[in-house]
Length: 173
Image 1: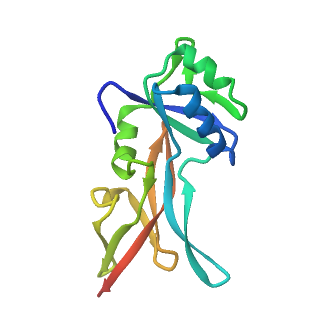
Image 2: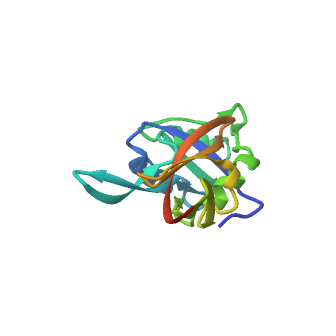
């Protein structure tokens, strides 16, 4: 999915309208770029029943992967619900490659971050597999009851703490 020629761009949109605007972006951008809403799988409990949901990693943002120019910027900004494209006078500004390297390794081809499997041994968390496997240092805390890990990620030059879904396989003391 990711090649050296293409870059990631950020489109700031009305929160809650990401899916609608993503569909319009697909038509607008044709084969120039693929719009992606980065989502994470989480477990949520309502009325005592656990269900799996997908929540936006960055509400109000759609990322576009490809090659965009200043004319694409104009077309994107015409889409209702689009607030702005991260850009300057020359057109869209790509997101910093270092920031996106981690995100690229976390997501699947559809932009979904799945569950990571963890074992807790002597109060130490060991990530055995899943998207967080090589990023143990980014995990700041674990909520065993909710099956979530708080993870530190960079996005558009800002550090954020985000919940990711985990499966606790075993607790060894």
